[in-house]
Image 1 (cartoon, rainbow, N blue to C red):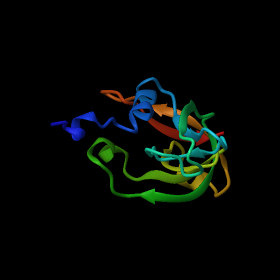
Image 2: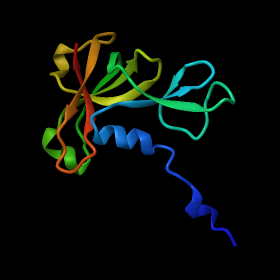
Image 3: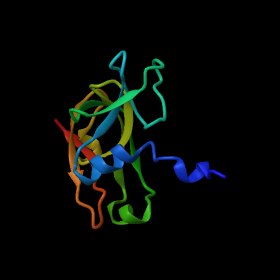
Length: 129
């Protein structure tokens, strides 16, 4: 008998490996070249599959909030800026912004930065470009 559960791979493994190397990896449709985020087992745009490529790390703030609650590793950072970042590759991702909330506006360009982690993976944060 074959145990199919043990044969499954982590579809997001290249994303997590990229974070360990301080590289933001995205999936791109093999036929159209369109990017998608979060990692999925198949493309949103065609049946040809996906390829992993490194993102440029550039984008713009699409939505913005000041978070007053945090997971344990961010407890000392409360309040912190959380934004929906529209990446130049197309998809949006939720990320922290390393800047005072009052200095940020919707549409503002941002670029990728990295937060040092005690134990990798490192987490992407963005800063004003």
